[in-house]
Image (cartoon, rainbow, N blue to C red; front, top):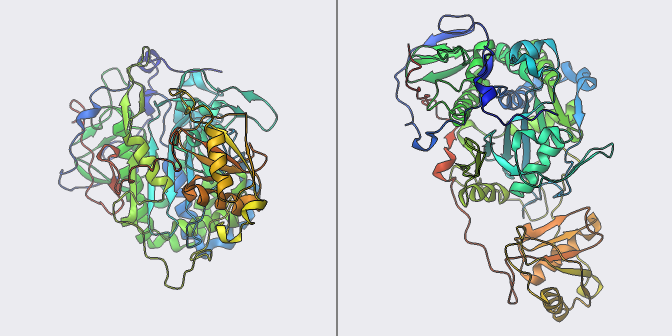
Length: 569
Protein backbone atom coordinates (compact mmCIF):
# COMPACT_ATOMS: atom_id res chain seq x y z
CA UNK A 1 0.00 0.00 0.00
CA UNK A 2 1.37 3.38 -0.99
CA UNK A 3 0.46 6.29 1.24
CA UNK A 4 1.10 9.76 -0.10
CA UNK A 5 1.45 12.36 2.61
CA UNK A 6 4.49 14.16 1.30
CA UNK A 7 4.29 17.53 -0.35
CA UNK A 8 7.52 16.73 -2.20
CA UNK A 9 5.76 14.53 -4.75
CA UNK A 10 3.48 17.45 -5.57
CA UNK A 11 6.45 19.37 -6.90
CA UNK A 12 7.82 16.49 -9.02
CA UNK A 13 8.58 16.68 -12.71
CA UNK A 14 5.47 14.89 -13.88
CA UNK A 15 3.85 17.37 -16.23
CA UNK A 16 0.37 16.00 -15.56
CA UNK A 17 0.34 16.87 -11.87
CA UNK A 18 -2.63 18.82 -10.51
CA UNK A 19 -4.82 17.49 -13.27
CA UNK A 20 -2.67 18.40 -16.26
CA UNK A 21 -4.38 17.24 -19.40
CA UNK A 22 -3.84 18.32 -22.98
CA UNK A 23 -6.11 20.67 -24.83
CA UNK A 24 -8.79 22.97 -23.42
CA UNK A 25 -8.25 26.68 -23.07
CA UNK A 26 -10.00 29.66 -24.59
CA UNK A 27 -11.24 28.85 -28.02
CA UNK A 28 -10.42 25.17 -27.62
CA UNK A 29 -13.00 22.47 -28.40
CA UNK A 30 -15.51 22.11 -25.64
CA UNK A 31 -15.40 25.78 -24.59
CA UNK A 32 -17.85 28.42 -25.75
CA UNK A 33 -17.09 31.89 -24.31
CA UNK A 34 -20.05 33.89 -23.11
CA UNK A 35 -18.97 37.23 -21.65
CA UNK A 36 -20.32 38.58 -18.42
CA UNK A 37 -19.18 41.03 -15.80
CA UNK A 38 -16.59 39.97 -13.32
CA UNK A 39 -18.40 40.53 -10.05
CA UNK A 40 -18.29 37.65 -7.67
CA UNK A 41 -17.64 36.55 -4.12
CA UNK A 42 -14.67 38.00 -2.30
CA UNK A 43 -11.61 35.84 -1.77
CA UNK A 44 -11.36 34.15 1.60
CA UNK A 45 -8.57 35.47 3.74
CA UNK A 46 -8.51 32.23 5.70
CA UNK A 47 -7.16 30.26 2.72
CA UNK A 48 -3.80 31.99 2.68
CA UNK A 49 -1.56 28.94 3.00
CA UNK A 50 -1.97 26.31 0.23
CA UNK A 51 -1.90 22.68 1.30
CA UNK A 52 0.51 22.04 -1.55
CA UNK A 53 -0.95 18.84 -2.93
CA UNK A 54 -2.10 18.92 -6.51
CA UNK A 55 -1.71 15.40 -7.80
CA UNK A 56 -4.45 12.80 -8.16
CA UNK A 57 -7.60 14.70 -7.47
CA UNK A 58 -10.22 15.01 -10.11
CA UNK A 59 -13.38 16.13 -8.39
CA UNK A 60 -15.49 13.23 -9.54
CA UNK A 61 -18.24 13.80 -7.03
CA UNK A 62 -19.87 16.13 -9.55
CA UNK A 63 -20.36 13.19 -11.83
CA UNK A 64 -21.98 11.24 -9.00
CA UNK A 65 -24.63 13.89 -8.48
CA UNK A 66 -24.89 14.30 -12.22
CA UNK A 67 -25.74 10.65 -12.59
CA UNK A 68 -28.54 11.04 -10.07
CA UNK A 69 -29.93 13.99 -11.97
CA UNK A 70 -29.61 12.11 -15.23
CA UNK A 71 -31.58 9.20 -13.89
CA UNK A 72 -34.13 11.54 -12.34
CA UNK A 73 -34.71 13.33 -15.62
CA UNK A 74 -34.92 10.06 -17.48
CA UNK A 75 -38.51 9.12 -16.63
CA UNK A 76 -39.45 8.96 -20.31
CA UNK A 77 -36.51 6.69 -21.06
CA UNK A 78 -36.85 4.38 -18.06
CA UNK A 79 -37.47 1.25 -20.12
CA UNK A 80 -34.47 1.99 -22.29
CA UNK A 81 -31.94 1.31 -19.56
CA UNK A 82 -33.49 -1.48 -17.53
CA UNK A 83 -31.07 -3.79 -19.27
CA UNK A 84 -28.26 -1.98 -17.44
CA UNK A 85 -29.01 -3.88 -14.20
CA UNK A 86 -26.22 -6.29 -14.95
CA UNK A 87 -23.74 -3.43 -15.31
CA UNK A 88 -24.22 -2.02 -11.81
CA UNK A 89 -21.13 -2.51 -9.63
CA UNK A 90 -21.72 -2.80 -5.88
CA UNK A 91 -19.74 -2.88 -2.64
CA UNK A 92 -20.55 -3.10 1.07
CA UNK A 93 -22.16 0.00 2.59
CA UNK A 94 -20.41 0.23 5.98
CA UNK A 95 -17.36 -1.75 7.05
CA UNK A 96 -17.13 -0.10 10.47
CA UNK A 97 -18.53 -1.10 13.83
CA UNK A 98 -20.62 2.05 14.30
CA UNK A 99 -23.72 1.27 12.26
CA UNK A 100 -26.53 3.72 13.01
CA UNK A 101 -29.21 1.74 11.19
CA UNK A 102 -30.15 4.27 8.50
CA UNK A 103 -32.06 7.54 8.68
CA UNK A 104 -35.08 7.61 10.98
CA UNK A 105 -38.56 8.96 10.09
CA UNK A 106 -39.79 12.20 11.61
CA UNK A 107 -43.11 12.58 13.42
CA UNK A 108 -44.95 12.66 10.06
CA UNK A 109 -43.42 9.42 8.83
CA UNK A 110 -41.12 11.25 6.40
CA UNK A 111 -37.58 9.91 6.16
CA UNK A 112 -34.52 12.01 5.30
CA UNK A 113 -31.84 10.53 3.09
CA UNK A 114 -28.05 10.76 3.33
CA UNK A 115 -25.83 9.73 0.41
CA UNK A 116 -22.03 9.83 0.52
CA UNK A 117 -20.55 10.70 -2.88
CA UNK A 118 -16.98 9.45 -3.27
CA UNK A 119 -14.44 10.29 -5.97
CA UNK A 120 -11.93 7.47 -6.39
CA UNK A 121 -8.71 8.35 -8.23
CA UNK A 122 -8.18 4.75 -9.39
CA UNK A 123 -6.03 4.50 -12.51
CA UNK A 124 -6.97 0.94 -13.35
CA UNK A 125 -7.72 1.21 -17.07
CA UNK A 126 -6.31 3.01 -20.09
CA UNK A 127 -8.95 5.74 -20.17
CA UNK A 128 -8.57 6.67 -16.51
CA UNK A 129 -4.78 6.52 -16.82
CA UNK A 130 -4.81 8.89 -19.80
CA UNK A 131 -7.03 11.35 -17.95
CA UNK A 132 -5.37 11.08 -14.55
CA UNK A 133 -1.68 11.08 -15.43
CA UNK A 134 0.84 10.34 -12.65
CA UNK A 135 2.21 7.19 -14.29
CA UNK A 136 3.88 5.99 -11.10
CA UNK A 137 0.44 5.48 -9.55
CA UNK A 138 -1.02 3.28 -12.32
CA UNK A 139 -2.83 0.21 -10.93
CA UNK A 140 -1.91 1.26 -7.38
CA UNK A 141 -4.31 1.54 -4.44
CA UNK A 142 -6.88 4.33 -4.96
CA UNK A 143 -7.61 7.31 -2.77
CA UNK A 144 -11.03 8.77 -1.92
CA UNK A 145 -9.76 12.19 -2.91
CA UNK A 146 -13.19 13.85 -2.84
CA UNK A 147 -15.98 13.11 -0.38
CA UNK A 148 -19.29 14.90 -0.29
CA UNK A 149 -22.36 14.14 1.83
CA UNK A 150 -25.68 14.85 0.16
CA UNK A 151 -28.60 15.25 2.59
CA UNK A 152 -32.16 15.21 1.25
CA UNK A 153 -34.61 16.59 3.80
CA UNK A 154 -37.38 14.39 5.14
CA UNK A 155 -40.07 16.55 3.55
CA UNK A 156 -38.11 16.80 0.26
CA UNK A 157 -38.19 20.60 0.43
CA UNK A 158 -34.43 21.14 0.50
CA UNK A 159 -31.05 19.54 -0.11
CA UNK A 160 -27.81 20.16 1.78
CA UNK A 161 -24.35 19.21 0.56
CA UNK A 162 -21.25 19.07 2.77
CA UNK A 163 -17.82 18.64 1.16
CA UNK A 164 -14.87 17.48 3.27
CA UNK A 165 -11.45 18.78 2.22
CA UNK A 166 -9.31 15.96 0.88
CA UNK A 167 -6.45 16.78 3.27
CA UNK A 168 -8.59 16.47 6.41
CA UNK A 169 -6.86 14.47 9.14
CA UNK A 170 -9.06 12.04 11.09
CA UNK A 171 -8.88 9.06 13.41
CA UNK A 172 -9.79 6.04 11.28
CA UNK A 173 -12.25 3.48 12.68
CA UNK A 174 -11.76 -0.27 12.62
CA UNK A 175 -12.96 -1.63 9.28
CA UNK A 176 -13.65 -5.28 8.49
CA UNK A 177 -13.89 -6.46 4.89
CA UNK A 178 -16.64 -8.95 3.95
CA UNK A 179 -13.96 -11.62 3.53
CA UNK A 180 -12.82 -11.13 7.13
CA UNK A 181 -9.71 -8.97 6.64
CA UNK A 182 -9.51 -6.50 9.54
CA UNK A 183 -8.02 -3.01 9.34
CA UNK A 184 -7.49 -1.93 12.97
CA UNK A 185 -8.53 1.50 14.17
CA UNK A 186 -5.74 4.02 13.65
CA UNK A 187 -3.61 5.05 16.62
CA UNK A 188 -3.07 8.51 15.19
CA UNK A 189 -4.46 10.91 12.61
CA UNK A 190 -4.79 9.61 9.06
CA UNK A 191 -5.62 11.60 5.93
CA UNK A 192 -9.27 11.06 5.12
CA UNK A 193 -8.71 10.10 1.48
CA UNK A 194 -6.84 6.97 2.61
CA UNK A 195 -10.02 5.51 4.10
CA UNK A 196 -10.87 3.74 0.84
CA UNK A 197 -7.64 1.74 1.10
CA UNK A 198 -8.93 0.14 4.30
CA UNK A 199 -11.33 -2.25 2.59
CA UNK A 200 -13.15 -0.05 0.08
CA UNK A 201 -15.81 2.68 0.08
CA UNK A 202 -17.50 1.07 3.07
CA UNK A 203 -14.61 2.27 5.23
CA UNK A 204 -14.99 5.81 3.90
CA UNK A 205 -18.63 5.59 5.00
CA UNK A 206 -17.50 4.29 8.39
CA UNK A 207 -15.08 7.20 8.82
CA UNK A 208 -17.84 9.72 8.08
CA UNK A 209 -20.24 7.95 10.43
CA UNK A 210 -17.67 7.98 13.22
CA UNK A 211 -16.89 11.68 12.77
CA UNK A 212 -20.35 13.11 12.13
CA UNK A 213 -22.75 10.65 13.82
CA UNK A 214 -24.89 11.03 10.69
CA UNK A 215 -26.55 7.80 9.50
CA UNK A 216 -25.49 7.22 5.89
CA UNK A 217 -28.05 5.37 3.80
CA UNK A 218 -26.14 4.96 0.54
CA UNK A 219 -22.89 5.74 -1.22
CA UNK A 220 -22.01 6.34 -4.86
CA UNK A 221 -18.41 6.21 -6.07
CA UNK A 222 -17.22 7.31 -9.50
CA UNK A 223 -13.97 7.61 -11.48
CA UNK A 224 -12.30 10.03 -13.93
CA UNK A 225 -13.89 9.03 -17.21
CA UNK A 226 -17.43 9.54 -15.94
CA UNK A 227 -16.88 13.31 -15.74
CA UNK A 228 -15.82 13.63 -19.35
CA UNK A 229 -18.49 11.34 -20.79
CA UNK A 230 -21.37 13.00 -19.00
CA UNK A 231 -20.16 16.56 -19.47
CA UNK A 232 -20.14 15.81 -23.20
CA UNK A 233 -23.61 14.29 -23.04
CA UNK A 234 -25.13 17.29 -21.26
CA UNK A 235 -23.95 19.65 -23.94
CA UNK A 236 -22.06 22.04 -21.67
CA UNK A 237 -22.22 23.76 -18.28
CA UNK A 238 -21.89 27.55 -17.81
CA UNK A 239 -19.13 28.66 -15.43
CA UNK A 240 -17.71 32.09 -14.62
CA UNK A 241 -14.31 33.60 -13.80
CA UNK A 242 -13.68 37.17 -12.65
CA UNK A 243 -10.59 37.53 -14.87
CA UNK A 244 -8.94 35.69 -17.72
CA UNK A 245 -7.44 32.55 -16.21
CA UNK A 246 -4.75 30.09 -17.28
CA UNK A 247 -3.98 27.30 -14.82
CA UNK A 248 -0.32 26.72 -15.68
CA UNK A 249 2.77 27.38 -13.59
CA UNK A 250 6.20 28.23 -14.97
CA UNK A 251 7.37 24.67 -14.42
CA UNK A 252 4.37 23.19 -16.25
CA UNK A 253 2.06 22.29 -13.41
CA UNK A 254 -1.64 23.07 -13.39
CA UNK A 255 -4.73 21.76 -15.14
CA UNK A 256 -4.17 23.77 -18.33
CA UNK A 257 -7.58 25.42 -18.01
CA UNK A 258 -7.67 28.64 -20.05
CA UNK A 259 -10.83 30.74 -20.05
CA UNK A 260 -11.65 34.39 -20.74
CA UNK A 261 -13.18 36.71 -18.18
CA UNK A 262 -16.92 36.19 -17.74
CA UNK A 263 -19.04 33.13 -18.50
CA UNK A 264 -18.05 30.19 -20.70
CA UNK A 265 -19.97 27.02 -21.46
CA UNK A 266 -17.60 24.12 -20.86
CA UNK A 267 -17.83 20.41 -21.58
CA UNK A 268 -15.69 17.31 -22.07
CA UNK A 269 -12.05 17.61 -21.02
CA UNK A 270 -12.45 21.35 -20.47
CA UNK A 271 -15.03 20.55 -17.79
CA UNK A 272 -12.56 18.08 -16.32
CA UNK A 273 -9.91 20.81 -16.30
CA UNK A 274 -12.28 23.12 -14.41
CA UNK A 275 -12.95 20.48 -11.79
CA UNK A 276 -9.24 19.74 -11.37
CA UNK A 277 -8.00 23.33 -11.26
CA UNK A 278 -6.29 24.47 -8.09
CA UNK A 279 -3.53 26.73 -9.40
CA UNK A 280 -5.39 29.83 -10.56
CA UNK A 281 -8.53 29.78 -8.41
CA UNK A 282 -8.73 32.01 -5.33
CA UNK A 283 -5.46 31.44 -3.42
CA UNK A 284 -4.35 28.24 -5.12
CA UNK A 285 -5.59 25.84 -2.42
CA UNK A 286 -7.76 22.76 -2.56
CA UNK A 287 -10.40 24.80 -0.74
CA UNK A 288 -10.67 27.14 -3.72
CA UNK A 289 -11.07 24.14 -5.96
CA UNK A 290 -13.95 22.96 -3.77
CA UNK A 291 -15.69 26.31 -4.31
CA UNK A 292 -15.25 25.89 -8.08
CA UNK A 293 -16.84 22.43 -7.97
CA UNK A 294 -19.83 23.86 -6.09
CA UNK A 295 -20.33 26.51 -8.78
CA UNK A 296 -20.16 23.82 -11.47
CA UNK A 297 -22.59 21.54 -9.65
CA UNK A 298 -25.20 24.24 -9.12
CA UNK A 299 -24.94 25.37 -12.73
CA UNK A 300 -25.25 21.80 -13.92
CA UNK A 301 -28.42 21.28 -11.89
CA UNK A 302 -29.97 24.38 -13.46
CA UNK A 303 -29.03 23.14 -16.94
CA UNK A 304 -30.80 19.85 -16.33
CA UNK A 305 -33.94 21.70 -15.34
CA UNK A 306 -34.11 23.74 -18.53
CA UNK A 307 -32.37 21.64 -21.18
CA UNK A 308 -35.12 20.32 -23.42
CA UNK A 309 -32.69 18.03 -25.26
CA UNK A 310 -32.76 15.68 -22.28
CA UNK A 311 -36.28 14.62 -23.23
CA UNK A 312 -34.64 12.51 -25.96
CA UNK A 313 -34.82 8.90 -24.68
CA UNK A 314 -31.87 7.78 -26.81
CA UNK A 315 -29.72 10.55 -25.34
CA UNK A 316 -30.93 9.72 -21.86
CA UNK A 317 -30.09 6.07 -22.36
CA UNK A 318 -26.55 7.05 -23.37
CA UNK A 319 -26.24 9.29 -20.31
CA UNK A 320 -27.53 6.61 -17.98
CA UNK A 321 -25.18 4.01 -19.41
CA UNK A 322 -22.18 6.33 -19.03
CA UNK A 323 -23.13 7.03 -15.42
CA UNK A 324 -23.73 3.42 -14.45
CA UNK A 325 -20.56 2.12 -16.07
CA UNK A 326 -18.54 4.68 -14.11
CA UNK A 327 -20.20 4.11 -10.72
CA UNK A 328 -19.88 1.74 -7.80
CA UNK A 329 -22.83 1.85 -5.38
CA UNK A 330 -23.83 0.10 -2.19
CA UNK A 331 -25.90 -3.08 -2.38
CA UNK A 332 -29.06 -1.15 -1.54
CA UNK A 333 -28.87 0.51 -4.98
CA UNK A 334 -28.16 -2.62 -7.00
CA UNK A 335 -31.10 -2.29 -9.40
CA UNK A 336 -32.05 0.32 -11.97
CA UNK A 337 -35.48 0.77 -10.44
CA UNK A 338 -33.88 1.60 -7.06
CA UNK A 339 -31.63 4.19 -8.68
CA UNK A 340 -34.61 5.56 -10.55
CA UNK A 341 -36.76 5.86 -7.41
CA UNK A 342 -33.87 7.51 -5.60
CA UNK A 343 -33.36 10.04 -8.39
CA UNK A 344 -37.05 10.92 -8.45
CA UNK A 345 -36.85 11.79 -4.75
CA UNK A 346 -33.84 14.03 -5.39
CA UNK A 347 -35.58 15.69 -8.32
CA UNK A 348 -38.27 17.09 -6.00
CA UNK A 349 -35.93 19.77 -4.64
CA UNK A 350 -35.80 23.01 -6.69
CA UNK A 351 -32.31 24.48 -7.32
CA UNK A 352 -33.12 27.42 -5.03
CA UNK A 353 -33.26 25.06 -2.05
CA UNK A 354 -29.92 23.33 -2.77
CA UNK A 355 -27.10 24.55 -0.51
CA UNK A 356 -23.47 23.62 -1.20
CA UNK A 357 -21.08 23.91 1.75
CA UNK A 358 -17.56 22.95 2.79
CA UNK A 359 -16.90 21.48 6.23
CA UNK A 360 -15.49 24.28 8.43
CA UNK A 361 -11.77 23.57 8.84
CA UNK A 362 -8.55 24.86 10.32
CA UNK A 363 -4.95 24.17 9.35
CA UNK A 364 -3.40 21.52 11.56
CA UNK A 365 -0.74 22.71 13.98
CA UNK A 366 0.51 19.21 14.74
CA UNK A 367 4.12 18.34 13.81
CA UNK A 368 4.51 16.96 10.31
CA UNK A 369 1.03 18.01 9.18
CA UNK A 370 1.82 21.33 7.51
CA UNK A 371 -0.84 22.12 4.94
CA UNK A 372 -3.23 19.49 6.27
CA UNK A 373 -6.53 20.48 7.86
CA UNK A 374 -8.75 19.32 10.71
CA UNK A 375 -12.45 19.93 11.43
CA UNK A 376 -12.90 23.38 12.95
CA UNK A 377 -13.95 22.96 16.59
CA UNK A 378 -17.54 23.93 17.23
CA UNK A 379 -18.48 25.06 13.73
CA UNK A 380 -17.90 21.72 11.99
CA UNK A 381 -20.04 20.02 14.62
CA UNK A 382 -22.72 22.70 14.19
CA UNK A 383 -22.91 21.84 10.49
CA UNK A 384 -23.04 18.10 11.18
CA UNK A 385 -25.73 18.63 13.81
CA UNK A 386 -27.91 20.54 11.36
CA UNK A 387 -27.73 17.59 8.98
CA UNK A 388 -28.44 15.10 11.78
CA UNK A 389 -31.46 17.10 12.89
CA UNK A 390 -32.68 17.73 9.34
CA UNK A 391 -32.31 21.52 9.57
CA UNK A 392 -32.01 23.30 6.21
CA UNK A 393 -28.60 24.91 5.79
CA UNK A 394 -30.04 27.89 3.89
CA UNK A 395 -31.92 29.19 6.94
CA UNK A 396 -35.30 28.94 5.20
CA UNK A 397 -36.60 26.03 7.23
CA UNK A 398 -38.52 23.05 5.94
CA UNK A 399 -41.67 22.86 3.91
CA UNK A 400 -45.07 22.50 5.56
CA UNK A 401 -46.19 18.86 5.86
CA UNK A 402 -49.39 17.97 4.10
CA UNK A 403 -52.48 18.90 6.09
CA UNK A 404 -53.63 15.30 6.06
CA UNK A 405 -50.35 13.97 7.42
CA UNK A 406 -50.50 12.27 10.77
CA UNK A 407 -47.69 10.89 12.90
CA UNK A 408 -46.61 7.46 11.71
CA UNK A 409 -48.15 7.83 8.23
CA UNK A 410 -45.74 8.59 5.38
CA UNK A 411 -46.45 12.00 3.84
CA UNK A 412 -44.11 11.36 0.91
CA UNK A 413 -42.52 8.23 -0.53
CA UNK A 414 -39.32 7.03 1.05
CA UNK A 415 -36.26 6.44 -1.08
CA UNK A 416 -35.18 2.83 -1.55
CA UNK A 417 -32.67 1.02 0.58
CA UNK A 418 -32.56 -1.92 2.96
CA UNK A 419 -31.97 0.28 5.99
CA UNK A 420 -34.91 2.60 5.41
CA UNK A 421 -37.58 2.15 8.11
CA UNK A 422 -41.10 2.79 6.92
CA UNK A 423 -42.75 3.84 10.15
CA UNK A 424 -41.56 5.75 13.17
CA UNK A 425 -41.36 3.79 16.43
CA UNK A 426 -43.53 5.34 19.10
CA UNK A 427 -44.01 4.73 22.81
CA UNK A 428 -47.68 4.00 22.12
CA UNK A 429 -46.79 0.60 20.57
CA UNK A 430 -44.30 -0.39 23.28
CA UNK A 431 -44.76 -3.12 25.86
CA UNK A 432 -45.63 -2.16 29.45
CA UNK A 433 -42.52 -0.85 31.30
CA UNK A 434 -42.48 -3.83 33.66
CA UNK A 435 -41.98 -6.18 30.69
CA UNK A 436 -39.12 -4.26 29.03
CA UNK A 437 -35.65 -5.58 29.85
CA UNK A 438 -33.02 -2.81 29.99
CA UNK A 439 -29.28 -2.78 30.63
CA UNK A 440 -27.54 0.44 31.75
CA UNK A 441 -23.84 1.11 31.16
CA UNK A 442 -21.65 3.84 32.62
CA UNK A 443 -20.14 5.74 29.66
CA UNK A 444 -19.62 9.06 31.44
CA UNK A 445 -15.90 9.29 30.64
CA UNK A 446 -16.62 10.37 27.07
CA UNK A 447 -15.00 9.18 23.87
CA UNK A 448 -11.71 10.94 24.38
CA UNK A 449 -11.37 9.78 27.98
CA UNK A 450 -10.81 13.35 29.15
CA UNK A 451 -13.22 12.93 32.06
CA UNK A 452 -13.16 10.26 34.75
CA UNK A 453 -16.18 7.98 34.85
CA UNK A 454 -18.67 8.88 37.58
CA UNK A 455 -18.62 5.98 40.03
CA UNK A 456 -21.96 4.22 40.39
CA UNK A 457 -23.64 6.22 37.63
CA UNK A 458 -25.12 3.15 35.90
CA UNK A 459 -26.79 2.10 39.15
CA UNK A 460 -28.22 5.59 39.67
CA UNK A 461 -29.82 5.69 36.22
CA UNK A 462 -31.05 2.11 36.62
CA UNK A 463 -32.78 3.21 39.84
CA UNK A 464 -34.44 6.07 37.94
CA UNK A 465 -35.93 3.57 35.50
CA UNK A 466 -37.01 1.25 38.29
CA UNK A 467 -38.86 4.16 39.88
CA UNK A 468 -40.73 4.64 36.59
CA UNK A 469 -41.97 1.05 36.50
CA UNK A 470 -39.13 -0.63 34.57
CA UNK A 471 -38.53 -3.56 36.90
CA UNK A 472 -36.27 -5.55 34.55
CA UNK A 473 -33.31 -3.18 34.73
CA UNK A 474 -29.68 -4.20 35.26
CA UNK A 475 -26.72 -1.90 35.94
CA UNK A 476 -24.02 -3.51 33.80
CA UNK A 477 -20.44 -3.86 35.00
CA UNK A 478 -19.37 -3.40 31.39
CA UNK A 479 -18.81 0.27 30.59
CA UNK A 480 -18.61 2.36 27.44
CA UNK A 481 -17.42 5.74 26.17
CA UNK A 482 -20.00 8.20 24.86
CA UNK A 483 -20.06 11.97 24.71
CA UNK A 484 -23.86 11.97 24.41
CA UNK A 485 -26.21 9.54 26.12
CA UNK A 486 -27.71 7.02 23.70
CA UNK A 487 -30.03 4.04 23.77
CA UNK A 488 -29.18 1.19 21.42
CA UNK A 489 -31.35 -1.77 20.55
CA UNK A 490 -30.69 -4.93 18.56
CA UNK A 491 -33.83 -5.80 16.58
CA UNK A 492 -36.74 -4.02 14.94
CA UNK A 493 -39.07 -5.65 17.46
CA UNK A 494 -37.30 -3.72 20.24
CA UNK A 495 -37.54 -0.29 18.56
CA UNK A 496 -40.77 0.81 20.23
CA UNK A 497 -39.62 -0.42 23.64
CA UNK A 498 -36.34 1.49 23.25
CA UNK A 499 -38.30 4.62 22.36
CA UNK A 500 -40.36 4.15 25.54
CA UNK A 501 -37.16 3.99 27.60
CA UNK A 502 -35.95 7.23 25.98
CA UNK A 503 -39.22 8.94 26.81
CA UNK A 504 -39.04 7.78 30.43
CA UNK A 505 -35.51 9.16 30.79
CA UNK A 506 -36.18 12.42 28.96
CA UNK A 507 -33.78 11.58 26.13
CA UNK A 508 -34.57 12.82 22.60
CA UNK A 509 -35.87 10.45 19.93
CA UNK A 510 -32.62 10.92 17.99
CA UNK A 511 -30.75 9.20 20.83
CA UNK A 512 -32.40 5.87 19.98
CA UNK A 513 -30.25 3.81 17.60
CA UNK A 514 -30.42 0.34 16.15
CA UNK A 515 -27.09 -1.48 16.52
CA UNK A 516 -25.68 -4.95 15.93
CA UNK A 517 -23.22 -4.33 18.78
CA UNK A 518 -25.80 -4.92 21.53
CA UNK A 519 -27.95 -7.93 22.39
CA UNK A 520 -31.00 -6.07 23.73
CA UNK A 521 -31.87 -2.55 24.88
CA UNK A 522 -28.85 -0.83 26.39
CA UNK A 523 -28.70 2.68 27.86
CA UNK A 524 -25.25 4.27 27.53
CA UNK A 525 -25.06 7.08 30.10
CA UNK A 526 -22.76 9.59 28.43
CA UNK A 527 -20.53 12.47 29.46
CA UNK A 528 -23.51 14.82 29.05
CA UNK A 529 -25.32 13.15 31.98
CA UNK A 530 -22.89 12.85 34.85
CA UNK A 531 -25.36 13.92 37.56
CA UNK A 532 -29.06 14.45 38.16
CA UNK A 533 -32.26 12.89 36.97
CA UNK A 534 -32.15 14.19 33.39
CA UNK A 535 -29.27 14.77 30.97
CA UNK A 536 -28.00 18.28 30.38
CA UNK A 537 -29.90 19.57 27.35
CA UNK A 538 -27.74 20.60 24.40
CA UNK A 539 -27.72 24.26 23.31
CA UNK A 540 -30.22 25.19 20.61
CA UNK A 541 -29.24 23.99 17.16
CA UNK A 542 -28.12 26.59 14.61
CA UNK A 543 -30.72 27.69 12.08
CA UNK A 544 -28.28 28.44 9.26
CA UNK A 545 -24.91 27.10 8.13
CA UNK A 546 -21.95 28.95 9.70
CA UNK A 547 -20.22 31.51 7.50
CA UNK A 548 -17.08 29.36 7.52
CA UNK A 549 -18.99 26.73 5.51
CA UNK A 550 -18.90 29.09 2.50
CA UNK A 551 -22.50 28.27 1.49
CA UNK A 552 -23.55 28.62 -2.16
CA UNK A 553 -27.22 28.58 -3.16
CA UNK A 554 -28.31 26.58 -6.18
CA UNK A 555 -30.14 29.55 -7.72
CA UNK A 556 -27.07 31.78 -7.60
CA UNK A 557 -26.22 32.13 -11.29
CA UNK A 558 -23.96 35.13 -10.57
CA UNK A 559 -21.28 33.10 -8.77
CA UNK A 560 -17.87 33.80 -10.31
CA UNK A 561 -14.48 32.39 -9.31
CA UNK A 562 -11.86 34.84 -8.07
CA UNK A 563 -8.52 34.36 -9.84
CA UNK A 564 -5.18 33.84 -8.12
CA UNK A 565 -2.63 36.57 -8.89
CA UNK A 566 -0.15 35.48 -11.55
CA UNK A 567 -2.55 33.17 -13.37
CA UNK A 568 -4.21 35.68 -15.71
CA UNK A 569 -3.46 36.35 -19.37
